[in-house]
Length: 378
Figure 1 (cartoon, rainbow, N blue to C red):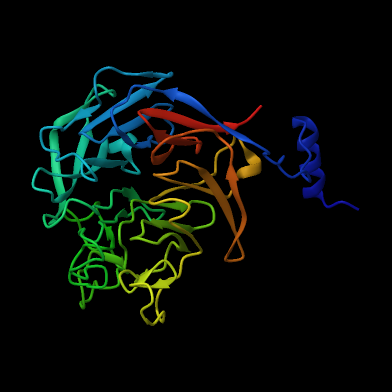
Figure 2: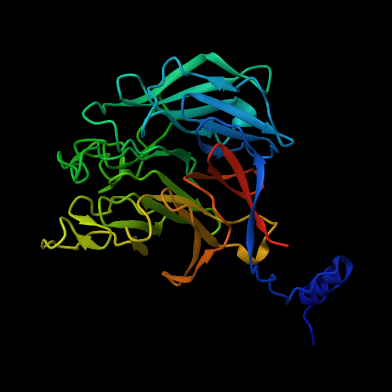
């Protein structure tokens, strides 16, 4: 005899037309639907919670709003006067505070005209389509003047409500200053800050060097150029895509709450000793769950785990791309291992600078001045 809860579930399913025993339909093919075009070097896309608009970051120092399929002519924010742009430098990402609807705070990650990495806080103005440009407050500045490359690029809020950012190793081939393995510098790390405590930030409890032995802002070490990282908000996994040196691109997947991890650079490139042919110890190092060689690409563009509703058969799938090749690939994590690896036939995309995620969890690609939504093929 069915339990009362099961009877209720079946009754609800009958009302809605859904069978609770059905699995989501498989997605056999995808296509890229153009949402906006004519943008100037877009490098990031995001949205506040419960907001249908898309906020697109342009490398030169502007944030544009896409609403109802149109790019609003006046930028949401324009800080081109303070951004040093070109190559790997520029305005590289933004993040809305988890309580944006209450406090109006958002944060930008950029390289200034000296080459240093800055994270600044702004507030939206009374006009929801414009930021208050005079509200800028510096959160953190990280010196980065020796080379123009390897700036990292992402600021984001984790599932714990803390701010995370991931500066690159400082640039130059092979990490000549060995910043990746040096806990006394913020370069080549993932940082974790409490921006709701003391100004400009406080050190969250649980940071591995909060009690000494290294910079207290550090959450993880051993990264080369982690251009993009993201959390699976349902499974609690952090995916870190680290751009490789000359041979290997990698994706790491670790528990979101795991502090003090060492991703290996510059002792290792991917799962291999660096330089190639040298001997090294992998003890205490995070090994990537997936890597690919430079015969398949040159610079990984990390994405997101899909948790939207438009493609239920792909929920839990991590998407990623490569800047040079422009393909679209995905995999799932099952019992700690990569499964269902796939390359999707979506045509010629061009240089994929970033993925984006809207407030509903739907995914986008940014390439060639365009915003492209990932949708099922008819």
